[in-house]
Length: 559
Ligand code: FHN
Image (cartoon, rainbow, N blue to C red; front, side, top):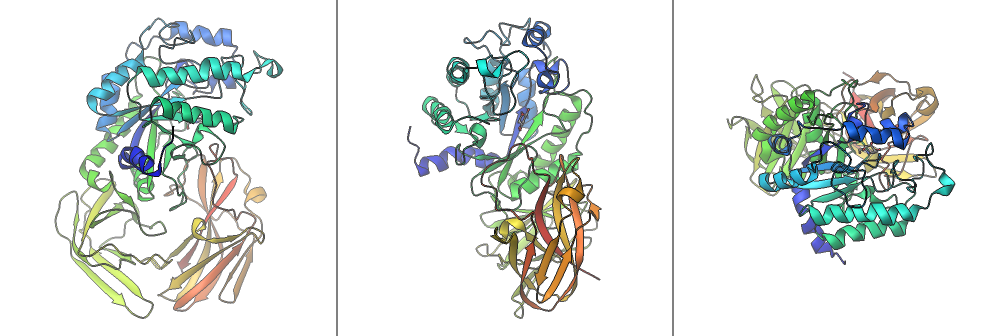
């Protein structure tokens, strides 16, 4: 089927407007309760794993309650694991008996029940399908993660799996459950370009409007939108394609009884806002129990988020990303025609006054969505340095919980200074994604403007993966050159942030002080040479394998 560019835009529109979806990892693995990789981790033989099906009887499952929870949380679509890597179909498959209707005492088809409820409650139903990894089937072959304890790799005939299971089951999913919003494929390592294309075409031929995520293939450019790595939040405008971050509420996808490391509701709201402000979607995961219940800790968080979204929905759904090329210290921005929304993170927001630099158009009115009370504003322009400032007086108490959203109604067309300028705190943030990269020299270069001169601490921002040895992967020589000043440093882990706007498990944000520089009022070029300088990622690195990811340079004024 040929999909034109115009078709593509309108096919994607519902999803781009939706911003927020529910991911559900549910399967037999809820019984051992150690996450969805339990079978692989314990090298459980197929015959033994199949016994789990006989005990799987999730009688407390209620499609109505799950869909209602998603809806109350403000989610517009739901992606459920129709089959995960363990090969167990959570729907009534006719091509494989290892499925929830034929192999369990439950005998119900939860996918059918969810399809009916989603229709009723107006949520788009979508499927996760592990199309390459299948530890149950003797012939599935992945680049790395195969069941080699029951089967010999050399005996595997991939197309027997592909033609008898993967394609027929995808066909079942797309022909039996009504219109499907999207197919969320995963872990395509080793799948050829031709087979990837075949899977994309199969979906589009059966349901032309059904979207396909980029994880259908490791070959770049496939799929309708970009799935980021697990829990990965890109920097501003890193992706040219529409994108989505799949995110956990604790550290696990499938139900894991020992993982009680739950993210705070405020952190989840910060992440949601941050993602939407950069033009992405958040797909937030729950891992229901073997009884069919969504864990209480997850439900509690979803309800809190829903409550917040309810008050601030106009600043989330159907919005456009921030026009500024950097993150703000105090929160994030989304926009809509004639309006700019400032999402103030209570934890980081200044007191008394918020100053936004670089907004060129006139603001007619400012108020918080939570109470609508007009706020006093003052806009100014300094010709020297071509600097625009909007000052907004803040009430002594912010009106919402965790994040208060301020609407700015514009008198004119939205126009901003898109260069790297100083934020009100005096900080200048240079994101790697916006640098000019010279890979041969391992050099990143930025131009930026200084309006308030002085001495600046040059701070390197990296995301470091859990368990990584800094000395080995981050602590190599870095050279910074700016306005005739040179810093040559082996960075240290000076600050490891507890909470970061874009960084989360399995990474931590590390800030390293590289030294001080002096800058007068002018425009400058800064270059950084480091072996961690990379090009923009070309396609998703789903495992987020890099030990240390260089993200930005910050110039922080020394008071
Ligand atoms: O291996 C899977 C994992 O179990 C989980 O489903 C996540 C969700 O994005 N995807 C894979 C790893 O990236």
